[in-house]
Image 1 (cartoon, rainbow, N blue to C red):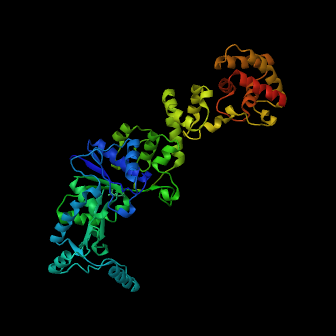
Image 2: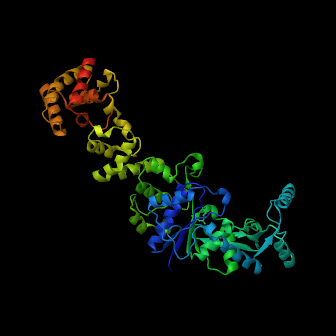
Image 3: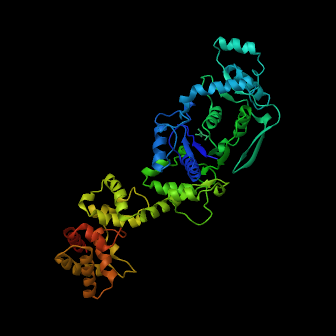
Length: 481
Ligand code: GLU
């Protein structure tokens, strides 16, 4: 079988994490089977349409590396791939169902429906459409259509029996037809509902496997009645459990949870996000955690999909991001980090970018807010001499004074300012004073950074500051002691 799948987002906002994961799993499955991955934009619900959302979906998917083989803007033999551009295609299918008795025209107005719903609910019932128009004589239907009356076309769900389907994850799902509503297939504006369009499009686009969120589990039996009415072969269904924020609620932009783009702008690497998201709801069956896209394509399996909702853990993502950062080559890291450093406003041109990047790479978990820890290079913070006191290093302000006084001149006299020469010089001071390393290195680091904790030690910081500034800071510290 030639696998054909689709990701079918509605352009109602941004590419959310749940959507991205659905797209990713669909993509992995498809590529593993050398199939075609199709992007379809489901924009028939004009009220929910958000301008710019379609472009956001394209750009998000491209950034994530989920390139579609067919779709809007790349084309394909089954286009158009935007539902609103397919709008004339659906009505004939609905009319075909009317002919075969699986659908009917409905002329009920909103007021009539509201009144009957209210009466039903007042009597304690649960409203569903009462098939009022189902048996309208053909002649009357023709007359009202000719008169230009507004209508919808509804699915004629059998009053008895059951509708069912088989899901790869959830197994056999069956619903009593008596519980199903005669859903609208074609709306009064002539456009299909999502419910109808997805069936027509999946069939006419030759889709073999449908992966989507489990919120569609309860509607899928109705879709299958449509497949049966047309006599079409049904796709394989894989409904995915939701991505959760915690044990009780779904990840949702509404509660401020980040979208894919948000995560990118928070300084997460796209490779790390994609890798992490793959693991939220899918288990490779071994302990592996790090995957490139190609490795994911190879390792992915439907059997590894989780049957219970999986939690999106920001801390885990952050950890993984840090690992991705560490594993870059220094060149890759510098290339990735420099735009962030420049954006931060830090005056990188005044310092050795290679040294800064080296310090960052071993520490950064994210690419944003990385530079705040280097503010002390630009402006020495005020600090209390108490910072010199460190039990383990066996230092205190008294010892610091001796160490700094002894270090100042040798540092000032260094003919060459390099990591090696600074390091040797400081160890020379240690030897000359007969102290422990920490008794010199700790005070020097405090004196030139003003901070108890810094990226890098005395040598790296002195190297970054340069000889003149390092000595000036030591002098200042001595004066304060
Ligand atoms: N347009 C639907 C959504 O965004 C897609 C559902 C499906 O994949 O069938 O949720």
